[in-house]
Amino acid sequence: MGHPAPIPTPPGTAPPAAPLRDRLTIPVLASGGILMAVMQTVVVPLLPDLPRLTGASAATVSWTVTATLLAGAVLTPVLGRAGDMYGKRRVLTGALALMTVGSVLCALSSDIGVLIAARALQGAAASVVPLSISILRDELPPERRGSAVALMSSTVGIGAALGLPLAALVVQYADWHTMFWLTSALGALGVAATWWAVKESPVREPGRFDTLGALGLAAGLVSLLLGVSQGGTWGWGSPRVLGLFAATVVVLALWWWQQLRAERPLVDLRLVTRPRVGLSHVAALLTGFAFYANSLVTAQLVQAPKATGYGLGLSIVATGLCLLPGGVTMLLFSPLSARISASRGPRITLALGAAVIACGYALRIADSRDLWMIILGATVVATGTTLAYSALPTLILRAVPAGQTASANGVNVLMRTIGQATSSAAVAAVLVHHSSPLGGIPVPTLHGYLLAFAMAGAVALAACAAALTIPGDAPSGGTRRAREAAPGARDEALEGA
Image (cartoon, rainbow, N blue to C red; front, side):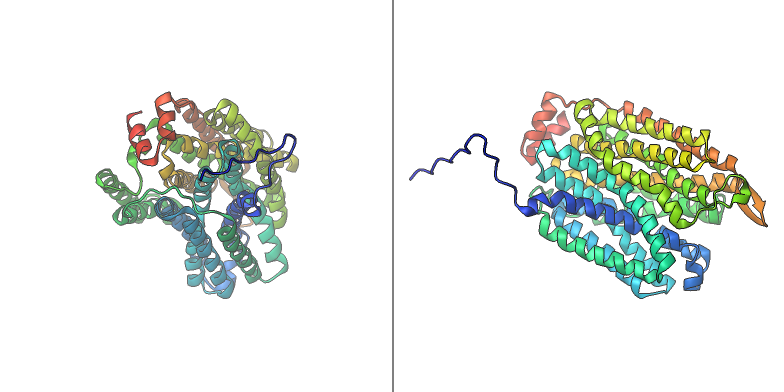
């Protein structure tokens, strides 16, 4: 018996609405990215008070930030690869669950050791954005994919802009544990919503997980980021820091050798060495450096005492509100980024974003005394960051096979993280070097802040130049056909393209 012919939809009749779960996929994934960024920033308002609240030294308390950074850097490429192999929704849900467990532990304890371990668990959430972007590529039609990926990329800045004033309000008017109970509830809701609304992607890259590669990458990254983040405290010429940097070179060289010989490597270095992928990673590192200086310097500048002659003496709540317009701008400009990428290509969007970041720092150098100019400059930097961060995953998605999108985007996010860590160390070094005593306490000078802006702006221009050297976005016919082929045939065709 033949199959009945489908009944056509009468002219003028709207197509049936998509199921509620399908319509909620993008909002749920975006909320997960925002929650991840909020979770990373909520501890910042607590840092000045944590030594008193926990009985620990300021150096020990700083590990509540460093532990999250290290864990996120290590786990992002590892969980990205696991998502490609075992299921992206499964790994995404697990990352959100680890983040939530870490928040619960922070809510239950005032012991600094427990807090540091809990913050390390929360670092797993750094993989949320690359995993979500990979799911969007697998599940959405091409006409919806660009705007959804742009929104997902912008959630990092949106969450950071929301997290700071939210945490400051809670810390100022309630017990600090309340903040972590609130994020625990939001995390549990995010886990449940992700499991219900997000479909498991059918695209897989089967094989045995590269445990040796994961351990080698972890050792190399911990050595690198530990040296960068603690160099200012331990001394850049100290034996510990120099030993860490030497270990980084040796371990990552051995890891590179091992990855080239592994049957199923954690990171496909053959993809990384292709100009479209490798230069995208370089641009991500430089953009991460340029973007992060904005938040670091703005927060310190507006909170500086008025006695400095340039500081505004704002509270931490008011400081968060100064950064809030930048977060709103990132939300509003993400659709524009997608349209520019669709018409001109993500390479041009990335270059434009980096150039806008540089313009924002030019405004900061021109005037960093008036509050409205500070907010304007910070918002322009946030706008450029939106354009750049939205273009980076699109570049990666166009350059790698579908079965490796989560791991490739994980490496791209890793490069941003390294850029941010390096930016933090560089800004701190500049401000420490250009300080003057105020009431017996060294305070950065305005000249130091302006030098930090100039440094970040120069790096943004370098990111713009790197973006313009990326090969054109339009794939050749052979590459286009390879991407449309079956997963196995696609990889072979890409190797020869």
